[in-house]
Length: 201
Picture 1 (tube, rainbow, N blue to C red):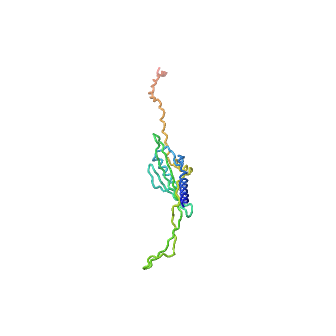
Picture 2: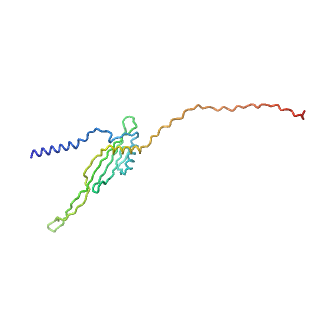
C-alpha cells in the first residue's frame, strides 16, 4: 500500500511539472507591440478594433480595454474569448506606447443532470420514486490563454488601422526679400515747334 501511495505521489508531481513546463518566459513579442502614439490613442484604437470584430466591450479607459465574444463551434460546445489590452507609456521621453494583449478562452460543454422525483407520503415522509428527468447545463470544461503569434499579429495590425494618422509639420515658406515699389518717374513732356500757318503770314 505504501508503494502505491508513493507511486501515485510521483504521478501527481510529474503532472504538475509537465503542466508548468511550457512557461519559459522566452518571448516578449507575442503579447506586446509598440506604437508611436499616446496611451489614450492606443487604447481607443484597441477598443475600436475589438468592436469591429463583434466583441462586447466590458471596460474601457485610457489604460485598459476588455471585451468578450461568444462562439458556438459545435452544437454542444460553447466558447467564450475574453480579450484584455493594457496600454503603458514607454520610459523616458519616448512618445511610444506599449500595448500588452492577452486573450483567455473558456470552453463549456453540455452536461446532463438527473433529477429524481420525490413524493410526500403522510407519516412516512418523503419518498423518492424511480421517475427521473434530465436537464442540460453548460459546464466549464477548459480554460486557456491563447498564445498563437498569428492571432495577435492580426489584432495588432488592426490596431494600426484605427490609430490617427500623424500630421507632419508644415515647413515654413522661404523668406524672400521685400522690395519696396519705386514711385513712377514722371517723364517731362517735350515741346514741339508748330509751324505757322501761311494764312497768318
